[in-house]
Length: 628
Image 1: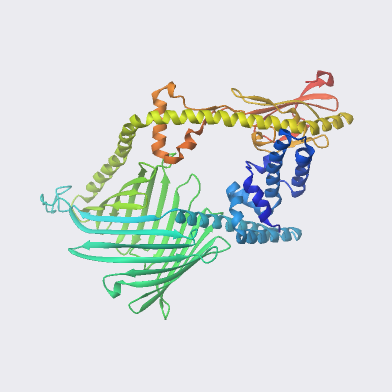
Image 2: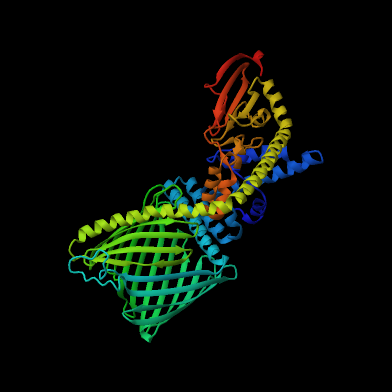
């Protein structure tokens, strides 16, 4: 097991796009092949072998880049981190020595089992290593979000009743025009969390109040959480109610386990009673299914108070399905729900749930729309077979939610089915009208944002041109550094009538064309050339030859309007949208003309195709006199 400290310091200072592509190896390559590729590059690019001046400085930069790539791929833990989470996963291990050691220990077991041909144990430990890394990254993201700035959470809930109003009033429902909608219950709660010492300690305080039936009550909460070691949290929560029966103190702890399991336990004391709560969260099926198990016990005799079993399946491009079975938590022991992202931008989400319990069955249908980056509007209907129909409305701004559930009609009132159908239609119209409301706000915003957006796009166009010019110069410098080794290989291959690259072009229709003859000859080994199945644009001597097209403000006002819509929709992330609009319909090609055993051939590959020369699929052009 290698030490990550020295290698990761170098990795963090180097920009590594794709270590496999930089070293010209396949993701399934062996350690010996990685070492051979690195040895070949180090001979050609080592700064001590270059003349002084710009050439040596350029070689130094490239040497650092493929040295960082080598350090990633030669280390099993870092290589796994890159394969699963990219460079974010690699850099995550810089300050996570404990996680690195545990992942490396599991991978060391894999090597031991490979020598003993124990495939089942090898697969199991590989899965455990991936789950450990994924769980640690998810936990780290939560801590980062908590430590950035004070977070405010709030909930305002106003429960209303309109059955005594003229709205949908018929039959035996009493119509009171002076009080069209009656407020049955209102509640408000608010909390503020502040993290200190790089997220290791956080303090939360808040409170709330409830008014129901002309009576009111208040409560206050205070919580202190601390992470003494990596992956472990302890917390103390104090709830202060109007009476001693409503007050309690809770001591809890949580721990991220090695197999992607998150465990919590707590003990709560309230007016002479003590309760123990245990909860386990675990990711299954390669993090596609999340399982939750919860149990509450009354001490000292461990009488069960409640239990919960829940599974959530979250597969890409499929509805998120959740199934829950509980006893003692609420009046609905069996619940099933489905959530689906309706549009491509993930701004329109539909949710449908069904439940069965002691008060009958319920069906809830809601749709949520993001009207801005931090604002979400939810509307829906909630039907309970023994109670009736409730119209739901909620406005969520950041972490503060304002909800107004309105009880529309009782389940025993005449014409209940017709009223439900009418409200379903009304609910659909409101959901559709949200699109027009958003568009009205966008139109008002366009007038004041167009000039600023035009300036932003102009600046970005200039940045893209400068970046592209630098990338071209880097690729040309890389090819110059590869010329001598390529010429040496060409002479040795000519001596044995082996593989000689006569001419190679990397090009795309409507974009650039670059000659990469020496770049490919550099990688010829024993009369053969092999390039992995990935884009060639990140290889040494290559760059992305596709031209990037930015929005031209002179091409029409409609384009400017659309960019403003994206500004509203994506907020700060619009820079990624403005970045460029690449013509992805055109795929770069690599055309190679080569000579092998006195005959000249030509072969054309698509950008991400694997390259293997010589090949029987190449077009034979004739004898060596054809040349290039």
